[in-house]
Image (cartoon, rainbow, N blue to C red; front, side, top):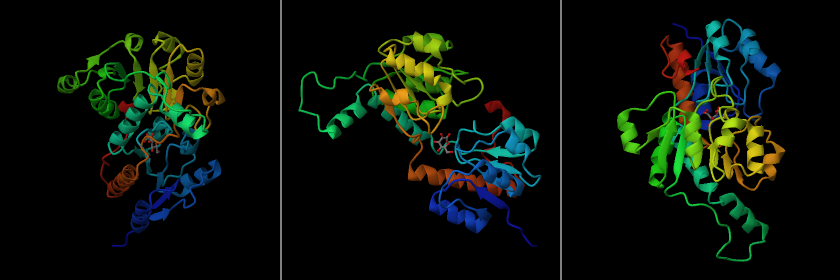
Length: 328
Ligand code: 8YV
């Protein structure tokens, strides 16, 4: 029996080992120099490809999906968040969508914990001081930040990553609070000593640190808005390793500049890679270039998941990481 390899278009450069395996398995179009594909290139891709492998940097909107040829069967996204894909449009057209959950949980939780430590302890400011050559030695009142141990952490979104953050935070002496659509299993709550708040407003008003760990969906867009930022204590911090859109960035900048809140650690932004210039001027923020899941191990595992999802669909089965309606 002859077997025609499916045409798989990969929009960005992936780890070499993944690209090599994809070349072996599929009729694969790689992006070796990693240039983000233009709108025209994406339009061309969806007209030809059987499978599209996009990332968070590709806007797979309704117009693009509507322009896809009948042959496009699967959008196998490289990443967990799928807010860059118009899922209802894909569903309507009978195009399956998969993602790569689980394998970046621990890495993203590590980065969240790093920000939880970095902001109150002024890590970036200290580093900038040393590099500037202006540091004139230890002083009893130099670079004073705030203690982590004994503070309250409020996690918004107690899914896989939120729970992994909670486990780490507990070890640093933080007491765990969370807001989620549903309470987590009692066993997990007990293990973490976690307190559930059904009211997000009330949780926000009582916390020392807030961590955003929910996905960006229509329901979570600007969840942390100007009104809620005003509920936070003036000594409180916010960290975000999820999606920039969950925070009203303009309102956050105002709150930081007015010292309505003490600081922020951001790995994600509303208009990536554009950063609000006002954020760049603030000292009380730690800014990272969306690197929460950026480990070699994680990226290879994500690539493997993409391959498994494609292979399973090609073999006529339900892929393990099929994105379903209930996630929206
Ligand atoms: C990914 C992420 O690396 O998986 C996610 O949702 O935010 C990132 O860490 C990125 O989305 C790649 O597409």
